[in-house]
Image 1: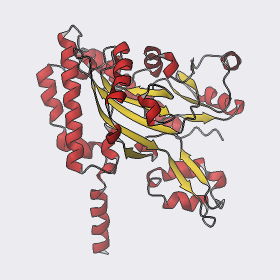
Image 2: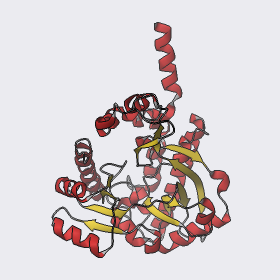
Image 3: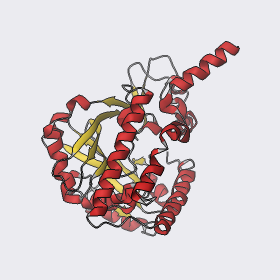
Image 4: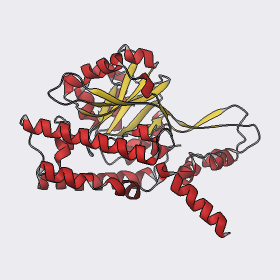
Length: 355
């Protein structure tokens, strides 16, 4: 028994991708105090993307990001306040020719909290009734590939760099014709961390035998937190891809961050066509390519430190051209409000069931 316990512990230690946040980052946390000292500011990263609140580290509005991006490259969106009457929402849907299904998500969000796919008017009414914050109604983009492009550029340089290109596959299970849905979820390695949430969402069908070959998407949020699998496509980074994102980023002063994209193909993306930008994540972006299974722990740390250095250098260059870092008081107030906001979303996300 002692041997088995030790083996399980060793297996967990090897799976560093699933370590608790603070435990994972502790060995490299020394870098942040050094940047605080060099910049003389705790909020130095607010200079990384001057047109985003808090540099896009946390708590920025998605609506503010979409409005800075080329409209034809973003999904069709409506911005809804909690006080908006439901009749007015239905009228906006008709005027803007929205069709079901579409997605809804908080204007200020993270980790897919309260992201939902709305199938009908009844679900939308329930979502609107319970939402205490501004949210976005957005067309459901059905392009087959979801990818992330991590982009960095120093403000005085014309060309940036793409440090990572990954494909993100949603969490799915495939039926074998014999197993119940609940058993397939229980046995899926990427679904274990979401077991409680998934069992609640699929409670009505957990005893259903899934036909052989049938695929069921367990989460439509393509992040590690929701069980997505990342595939390293760095071999596909080239001048054509860089030119596309240089052009996009020059127009809106996005210097550091990750573009999350739906596209028809990588070739189309490189030609600047057949894609939609789902989101841009700024200073708080995690270089998710470290989670593709192609990096050791030490290589992952090296990648993170490299990106933090880019973040610092970009922020400092913007400061030298006139951008003022946020004051200690302003940053503290913003971050405190952001924490309260996300706690509210997290509590509601665990309770809100639309089906």
